[in-house]
Image 1 (tube, rainbow, N blue to C red):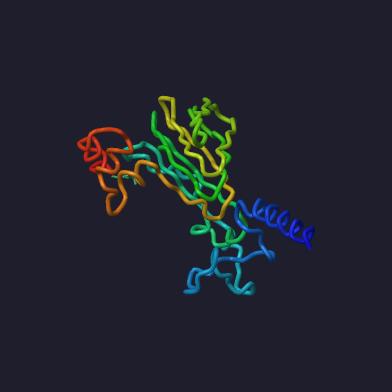
Image 2: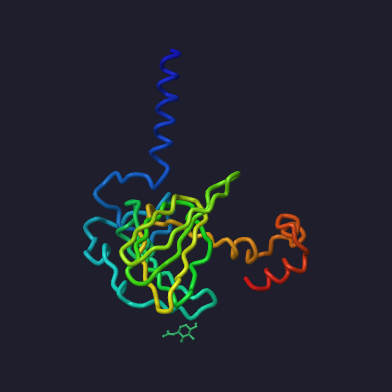
Length: 215
Ligand SMILES: *[C@@H]1O[C@H](CO)[C@@H](O)[C@H](O)[C@H]1NC(C)=O
Protein backbone atom coordinates (compact mmCIF):
# COMPACT_ATOMS: atom_id res chain seq x y z
CA UNK A 1 0.00 0.00 0.00
CA UNK A 2 2.72 2.45 1.03
CA UNK A 3 4.66 1.70 -2.12
CA UNK A 4 1.51 2.38 -4.17
CA UNK A 5 1.22 5.83 -2.57
CA UNK A 6 4.90 6.43 -3.26
CA UNK A 7 4.36 5.48 -6.90
CA UNK A 8 1.35 7.82 -7.11
CA UNK A 9 3.44 10.61 -5.58
CA UNK A 10 6.25 10.11 -8.09
CA UNK A 11 3.69 9.98 -10.90
CA UNK A 12 2.09 13.23 -9.70
CA UNK A 13 5.47 14.96 -9.54
CA UNK A 14 6.60 13.79 -12.99
CA UNK A 15 3.20 14.59 -14.52
CA UNK A 16 3.15 18.12 -13.11
CA UNK A 17 6.70 18.64 -14.45
CA UNK A 18 5.61 17.43 -17.88
CA UNK A 19 2.66 19.86 -17.82
CA UNK A 20 4.79 22.95 -17.19
CA UNK A 21 4.04 24.04 -20.79
CA UNK A 22 1.00 23.51 -23.03
CA UNK A 23 -0.51 20.00 -22.73
CA UNK A 24 0.45 17.52 -25.46
CA UNK A 25 -2.06 16.98 -28.27
CA UNK A 26 -4.16 13.80 -28.32
CA UNK A 27 -4.71 13.86 -32.10
CA UNK A 28 -2.82 15.00 -35.24
CA UNK A 29 -4.23 18.49 -34.92
CA UNK A 30 -7.06 20.45 -33.38
CA UNK A 31 -7.61 23.50 -35.56
CA UNK A 32 -9.32 26.13 -33.42
CA UNK A 33 -13.00 26.69 -34.15
CA UNK A 34 -13.31 30.42 -33.50
CA UNK A 35 -17.11 30.25 -33.83
CA UNK A 36 -17.65 27.74 -31.03
CA UNK A 37 -19.22 29.25 -27.91
CA UNK A 38 -17.87 26.34 -25.83
CA UNK A 39 -14.73 27.14 -23.81
CA UNK A 40 -12.12 24.51 -23.00
CA UNK A 41 -8.48 24.74 -21.90
CA UNK A 42 -7.38 25.90 -25.34
CA UNK A 43 -9.94 26.16 -28.14
CA UNK A 44 -12.46 23.67 -29.46
CA UNK A 45 -11.49 21.68 -32.58
CA UNK A 46 -12.97 22.38 -35.97
CA UNK A 47 -14.34 19.34 -37.86
CA UNK A 48 -11.12 17.81 -39.35
CA UNK A 49 -12.94 17.36 -42.69
CA UNK A 50 -13.35 21.15 -42.91
CA UNK A 51 -9.67 21.90 -42.20
CA UNK A 52 -7.70 23.67 -44.94
CA UNK A 53 -4.04 24.57 -45.52
CA UNK A 54 -4.83 28.19 -44.65
CA UNK A 55 -5.71 27.11 -41.10
CA UNK A 56 -1.99 26.37 -40.66
CA UNK A 57 -0.74 29.47 -42.44
CA UNK A 58 -0.03 33.19 -41.89
CA UNK A 59 1.09 35.80 -44.41
CA UNK A 60 2.94 38.99 -43.73
CA UNK A 61 5.89 38.33 -41.45
CA UNK A 62 8.08 40.01 -44.09
CA UNK A 63 6.25 43.29 -43.42
CA UNK A 64 7.81 45.93 -41.18
CA UNK A 65 5.74 46.63 -38.05
CA UNK A 66 4.79 50.23 -37.28
CA UNK A 67 7.19 51.44 -34.56
CA UNK A 68 5.74 54.98 -34.34
CA UNK A 69 4.76 54.71 -30.69
CA UNK A 70 6.13 55.71 -27.28
CA UNK A 71 8.45 52.69 -26.94
CA UNK A 72 9.63 52.47 -30.56
CA UNK A 73 8.85 48.82 -31.17
CA UNK A 74 6.10 46.63 -32.59
CA UNK A 75 5.36 42.97 -32.02
CA UNK A 76 3.61 41.11 -34.84
CA UNK A 77 2.24 37.97 -33.15
CA UNK A 78 1.69 34.64 -34.87
CA UNK A 79 -0.22 33.01 -32.03
CA UNK A 80 -3.31 30.78 -32.07
CA UNK A 81 -5.45 33.90 -32.58
CA UNK A 82 -3.71 34.41 -35.95
CA UNK A 83 -3.15 30.73 -36.90
CA UNK A 84 -5.98 28.48 -35.66
CA UNK A 85 -3.91 25.37 -36.55
CA UNK A 86 -1.55 26.19 -33.63
CA UNK A 87 -4.29 25.16 -31.19
CA UNK A 88 -3.00 22.38 -28.88
CA UNK A 89 0.53 22.37 -30.42
CA UNK A 90 2.35 24.38 -27.73
CA UNK A 91 4.31 26.69 -30.06
CA UNK A 92 4.02 30.14 -31.64
CA UNK A 93 6.19 32.91 -33.05
CA UNK A 94 6.45 36.65 -33.44
CA UNK A 95 8.31 39.32 -35.37
CA UNK A 96 9.61 42.28 -33.40
CA UNK A 97 10.53 45.52 -35.15
CA UNK A 98 12.57 48.20 -33.43
CA UNK A 99 13.06 51.85 -34.36
CA UNK A 100 16.58 53.17 -33.59
CA UNK A 101 16.97 52.92 -29.77
CA UNK A 102 13.45 51.51 -29.52
CA UNK A 103 12.67 49.10 -26.68
CA UNK A 104 10.42 46.14 -26.09
CA UNK A 105 9.68 47.12 -22.47
CA UNK A 106 10.08 44.77 -19.47
CA UNK A 107 7.40 42.08 -19.73
CA UNK A 108 6.80 38.40 -18.99
CA UNK A 109 5.10 35.50 -20.75
CA UNK A 110 3.24 33.53 -18.07
CA UNK A 111 2.92 30.42 -20.26
CA UNK A 112 6.06 30.25 -22.43
CA UNK A 113 9.80 30.31 -22.67
CA UNK A 114 11.05 32.32 -25.63
CA UNK A 115 13.97 31.87 -28.02
CA UNK A 116 14.85 34.90 -30.12
CA UNK A 117 17.17 35.54 -33.04
CA UNK A 118 18.29 38.85 -34.53
CA UNK A 119 17.74 39.23 -38.29
CA UNK A 120 18.96 42.81 -38.54
CA UNK A 121 20.78 45.24 -36.26
CA UNK A 122 22.07 44.92 -32.69
CA UNK A 123 19.94 44.30 -29.62
CA UNK A 124 20.70 44.54 -25.94
CA UNK A 125 18.57 41.85 -24.28
CA UNK A 126 18.14 40.73 -20.71
CA UNK A 127 16.07 38.99 -18.09
CA UNK A 128 15.94 39.13 -14.29
CA UNK A 129 15.95 36.04 -12.09
CA UNK A 130 13.31 35.63 -9.37
CA UNK A 131 13.63 36.65 -5.69
CA UNK A 132 15.79 36.99 -3.72
CA UNK A 133 18.67 37.36 -6.21
CA UNK A 134 16.93 39.46 -8.90
CA UNK A 135 20.06 38.92 -10.96
CA UNK A 136 20.11 40.69 -14.33
CA UNK A 137 21.38 38.44 -17.10
CA UNK A 138 22.08 40.62 -20.12
CA UNK A 139 23.95 40.50 -23.42
CA UNK A 140 24.37 42.40 -26.68
CA UNK A 141 23.23 40.39 -29.70
CA UNK A 142 24.30 40.88 -33.30
CA UNK A 143 22.62 39.62 -36.45
CA UNK A 144 22.33 35.81 -36.30
CA UNK A 145 22.75 35.61 -32.53
CA UNK A 146 20.17 33.70 -30.47
CA UNK A 147 19.05 34.27 -26.87
CA UNK A 148 16.65 32.43 -24.55
CA UNK A 149 14.22 33.98 -22.05
CA UNK A 150 13.04 31.38 -19.48
CA UNK A 151 9.29 31.07 -18.87
CA UNK A 152 7.76 33.65 -16.54
CA UNK A 153 10.85 35.83 -16.07
CA UNK A 154 10.79 39.59 -16.68
CA UNK A 155 12.74 40.40 -19.84
CA UNK A 156 13.34 43.17 -22.39
CA UNK A 157 15.09 44.06 -25.64
CA UNK A 158 16.55 47.34 -26.87
CA UNK A 159 17.83 48.35 -30.27
CA UNK A 160 21.28 49.81 -29.65
CA UNK A 161 21.79 51.05 -33.19
CA UNK A 162 21.02 54.03 -35.41
CA UNK A 163 18.97 52.00 -37.90
CA UNK A 164 15.96 49.69 -37.58
CA UNK A 165 16.38 46.25 -36.03
CA UNK A 166 14.36 43.07 -36.57
CA UNK A 167 14.07 39.95 -34.43
CA UNK A 168 12.09 36.74 -34.73
CA UNK A 169 10.98 34.97 -31.56
CA UNK A 170 9.62 31.47 -31.06
CA UNK A 171 7.57 30.71 -27.95
CA UNK A 172 6.60 27.50 -26.19
CA UNK A 173 2.85 28.08 -26.08
CA UNK A 174 0.07 28.57 -28.61
CA UNK A 175 -0.94 31.54 -26.46
CA UNK A 176 2.09 32.71 -24.43
CA UNK A 177 0.34 35.71 -22.84
CA UNK A 178 2.12 39.03 -22.38
CA UNK A 179 2.22 40.98 -19.12
CA UNK A 180 3.95 44.33 -19.63
CA UNK A 181 5.10 45.33 -16.17
CA UNK A 182 4.46 49.09 -16.42
CA UNK A 183 1.01 48.60 -17.95
CA UNK A 184 -0.01 45.94 -15.43
CA UNK A 185 1.21 47.89 -12.38
CA UNK A 186 0.47 51.52 -13.37
CA UNK A 187 -2.13 51.06 -16.10
CA UNK A 188 -4.52 48.52 -14.59
CA UNK A 189 -8.24 49.13 -14.97
CA UNK A 190 -9.33 50.22 -12.42
CA UNK A 191 -6.09 51.59 -10.89
CA UNK A 192 -4.29 49.76 -8.11
CA UNK A 193 -4.67 52.16 -5.11
CA UNK A 194 -1.90 54.77 -5.42
CA UNK A 195 -1.08 54.71 -1.69
CA UNK A 196 -0.52 50.95 -1.99
CA UNK A 197 1.88 51.50 -4.92
CA UNK A 198 3.60 54.38 -3.09
CA UNK A 199 4.39 51.98 -0.24
CA UNK A 200 5.36 49.15 -2.62
CA UNK A 201 7.77 51.35 -4.59
CA UNK A 202 8.83 53.41 -1.55
CA UNK A 203 8.18 56.73 -3.30
CA UNK A 204 5.86 59.71 -2.85
CA UNK A 205 2.26 59.34 -4.05
CA UNK A 206 2.80 62.18 -6.58
CA UNK A 207 5.30 59.97 -8.44
CA UNK A 208 2.69 57.19 -8.58
CA UNK A 209 0.03 59.61 -9.90
CA UNK A 210 2.50 60.67 -12.62
CA UNK A 211 3.19 57.05 -13.59
CA UNK A 212 -0.52 56.14 -13.52
CA UNK A 213 -1.26 59.03 -15.88
CA UNK A 214 1.29 57.62 -18.39
CA UNK A 215 -0.28 54.16 -18.75
C1 LIG B 1 1.99 54.22 -37.71
O1 LIG B 1 1.37 54.53 -36.49
C2 LIG B 1 1.16 55.93 -36.29
C3 LIG B 1 0.66 56.13 -34.87
O2 LIG B 1 -0.46 55.32 -34.59
C4 LIG B 1 0.20 56.44 -37.35
O3 LIG B 1 -0.01 57.83 -37.18
C5 LIG B 1 0.78 56.16 -38.73
O4 LIG B 1 -0.14 56.53 -39.72
C6 LIG B 1 1.13 54.68 -38.88
N1 LIG B 1 1.87 54.50 -40.11
C7 LIG B 1 1.51 53.58 -41.01
C8 LIG B 1 2.38 53.49 -42.22
O5 LIG B 1 0.54 52.85 -40.86
